[in-house]
Amino acid sequence: MATPRVAAGALFLNNEGHVLLVRPAYKNHWDIPGGYVEPGESPRSACIREVEEELGLTTPIGPMLVVDWAPAENEGDKLLFIFDGGTLTAQQELAIRFEDAELTEWRYVAAEALEQHGPPRLARRIRTAIAACSAGGSAYAEHGDAI
Image (tube, rainbow, N blue to C red; front, top):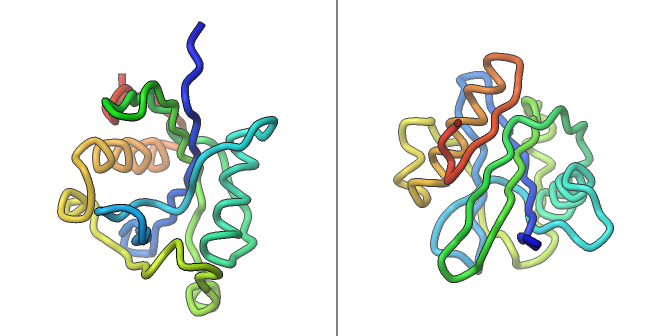
């Protein structure tokens, strides 16, 4: 039976439709806020916990936008969830705090520029989430591409 690693993250968009990305100190690329699901924890609960831990924000997390089957060569099988984080207010943006050294910075990035900040399949997954959010639905993806 499959035993994939499971992770969950939040898609935050600003009023221009740009994506909030964070720079993890332990990765060579940017990512959305999120992380691995702990044993006994749901993907949505993990997303809420990770946003609080990484950004120092307690904010409502909306519906699931994408579930992506994304096995990685050196990491094995993975199921990655993206939930709708909505739009942060200016006050929330000012309140972003990195509680530990896990993240070093954050910024908004246009959807067309995502490949400049991370791997192509991450960019595809985020664009799939943006499309699902715009359509008011959700999507199933494999390697970031909606099926």
